[in-house]
Image 1 (cartoon, rainbow, N blue to C red):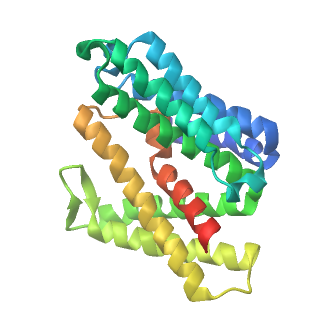
Image 2: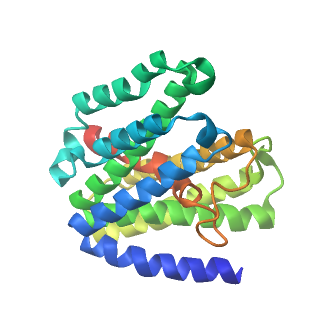
Length: 265
């Protein structure tokens, strides 16, 4: 517990100033974190030994290209360039033709491509949302932190029915429901008082509830990756918390879902 608390304090001391600053410092920090996340992915069970170094480099170049192609706040409504996505697909998939299956198969190529696209779109969206509005950025953090915190605490106190025991044995339906409700309530209060008080309450609550549910789905997806890979954490980079991927699991889908919402609603 002591390690977890110290790690949280240290992370907050680093993250809060960067969020406040935004701009280039924030983008650089996101880029560095994305590299650590990519490294953790490559080290998941057999990836590191079976993926050729050239392919690892091409995957990294593709991911960074997606992240930094558009980082202006106004680009949030334009989307990522199709040319960048197309080039990434070519760089990762086509080389599989020149390797034997046991070295770099087409199946492995699409596996790598999927993760590169997921991380690339997520980290790019993270920069875009911060540049668009720090208030919305904080809103997403509130949704995630409150949902996860209350789901964990109430799940331990009143949880009786396992949610998906084959993926995460400790998650319960009671904890998930209360977590989503509390995450929605607290983030709604923040939205109404800080961002926009003149809005349909049912609409904003519905949107934030959907994001709270999405946060739990993201957590479960990364838990499933760990379960299938037979690992407890993605790494031991953050004492008491695991790795980068362990910390951003809930955030990934929420950020992507928020982009969909803000550009269509």
